[in-house]
Image 1: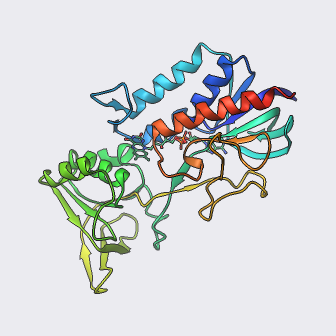
Image 2 (image 1 turned 30 degrees about the vertical axis):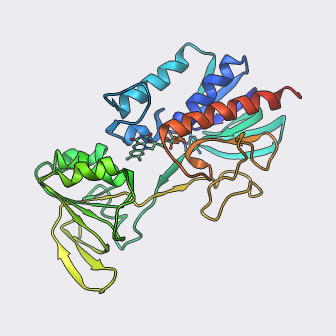
Amino acid sequence: MKQYDALVIGGGPAGITAAMYLARSACSVLLCEQLTPGGQILMTDTLENYPGYPKGIKGYELADLFSAHLDGLPVERATGAVDSVTGEAGNFVARCDKQEYGCKTVLVCTGARHRTLGLDREATLLGRGVSYCALCDGNFFRGQAVAVVGGGNSALEEALYLAKLAGKVYLIHRRDAFRGAKILLDRLNGTDNVVMILDTVVAKLHGETELTGLTLRNVHSGEERPLAVEGLFVYVGFEPATGFLPAVLERDARGFILTDTEMRTNIPGIFAAGDIRSKLCRQAITAAGDGATAAQAAFIFLEQF
Ligand SMILES: Cc1cc2nc3c(=O)[nH]c(=O)nc-3n(C[C@H](O)[C@H](O)[C@H](O)COP(=O)(O)OP(=O)(O)OC[C@H]3O[C@@H](n4cnc5c(N)ncnc54)[C@H](O)[C@@H]3O)c2cc1C
């Protein structure tokens, strides 16, 4: 079994940064990523708040640049999902794509995945009108009516993106105000084909084989009404995927991993960075910052072996 100083799980902004810092500290590193490197920024049209890019940068371009940054460094890569981590500090064993790897430390950078609305036939209509990624699927709805559900930055950003493609965008939020950035809200307010619907939830999806519309319900009056749309884009938050990690690893009530400010978890030798962590701000820049801190903390931890 091959041995490494550090195993980094997840190739988003947190994992790529952690791998970069560890390799530059002469640690042997294996980076396991189940998909294409880049993480959630591959689902983002343009990042306007990543320092150094005053005009914004396309998500896929930043992902390519992140990945290219590793190319000149001695970081080994494996493609596959890590499905178990066992053992203890200095002697962890992780399984990725049926292969076992030994490592002294583990850096969990597995991010978060979208939450669903939990409606009947939501899974059946996935890819048939229901989507969680405007960048991936928006093009299918050129000139059509779509709904975006959510009240945070992701929902606002994606509604703006869809407004350039779709004929009409209904932005639906269950509260009386959006919690996303004011600059995005101002832009949406100035966009003719966007209609905001507050205090409202999606109660039902219509359509057997393709989405044909929604039933909306006002959260105060309970009144229901139909809305004809061809597409539904859901941005109602994210949930962490930590099922493959030891049960004794401490999580918060929502399942995000608890760490101290140096990204140490309650299990010596296991660090967590990025969106997988219990924290306030989930962004590319904070994920990258967490990755750098976790790498430095792991580097210091490795001195004992
Ligand atoms: C639509 C949208 C718009 C956004 N817009 C912005 C924005 O404008 N600006 C901004 O700063 N941020 C934005 N974000 C948030 C930003 O993308 C995330 O905060 C950031 O990508 C988190 O980085 P991460 O490395 O922690 O996790 P992720 O980016 O989620 O990466 C985690 C990686 O781990 C991999 N993985 C998961 N489980 C396993 C496993 N078991 N084994 C191997 N690999 C695994 C995943 O495939 C993924 O590639 C946006 C997010 C979305 C969804």
